[in-house]
Length: 509
Image 1: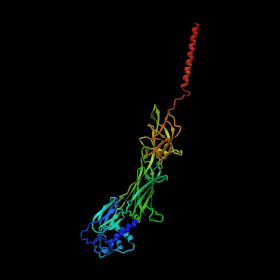
Image 2: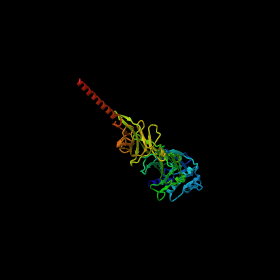
Image 3: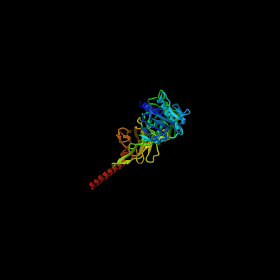
């Protein structure tokens, strides 16, 4: 209803100009007289949009003495617009031109034809070297253009659709009907619900979705998508679908699968792509609001950023579009994908102080008990083992994970979940653990104090601490232990015999 009222208001103003209409105080004048006090006020302007104002008809003279008839106005074609109004131009359908004077034709569906006229006039202005009367930039609020000569004006914006059509005799006020297009972006893995962030294993395929909210009068839409180094596009074309939510649809199903090189062009690199929508496609649906839904997939690679219990490092994917004559940029939408790391520290305690233990060996098990294949990376800081992924050499798979001289190693590239760390060999002289350590990676229960909650046997931790105890000295056979006993026993026997012999000699004397 509001739209109909606006259209009716535009049409009424249009008819005021071309027929015999206006109720103002009696006045007569000529364009030879300096009458440049007209204004056009544009309400609800889009920030940074460029509004071009074209004078399409000159108000040569007017006479409002005939109050009962609403006054009389004489309009002539402005410079550069003759082809539009004459010689079977698009404007000739709506007006009659006689002796260079313009009058509006009496038609039965004037509201619809007024919209058509405005659209065709804007297309003509953009396709011909027509002089722009003035240009203003939107500020997100109201913009007023002053000191305009009386005449009939067309106002268009860089969004590519008509803002309004009105006369500046003396003042015109129009409302910007265009909306700024926006984009939304989500990501999913393993068929989970799409969201702005998720967690995944290194090597997993991720499904991305970008939604472009297209507005009426769409022009020069180009989609830009950029991934961080930890993401790599899968080598296939994205799926692009046009969807209409309510209103006049494009077909019975209100959706349409777009074709590459027919409706758009697609250009990609390793970590980015550009989708350029063709002008003929945008022109076909310029009178509709709709969504363009872009689906594509990418791999979380070995170069992915790793997140820990106290550090969150996102693998990002950002998207935006440019649009309009001036390639204005929309909002930027971003997703964050995280993959986790588990730091492990092997130690013993001696006199209450911790001592790092090198040479301990481990294996990592998934929740179902299967061993997770890992390969060793080239991390120079400490031994780091990441999840094996497609494309890695199977010869690189390590049998066990080993601690260095600092008693440490990291396991990286893991999704949230439950894992089991098994010690398969203890350092020499130390006892091996008799049970596995339960390791949990979760975002729950952290009370916003930790980006990722790492738990060891259900206790929150910054790293997995594995303590070993030294073995005690036990007796053994075949060594000096029993021999020494025998020697001592023999010495005692000999000593006793010597004492007895001495006593007997003493008695004999």
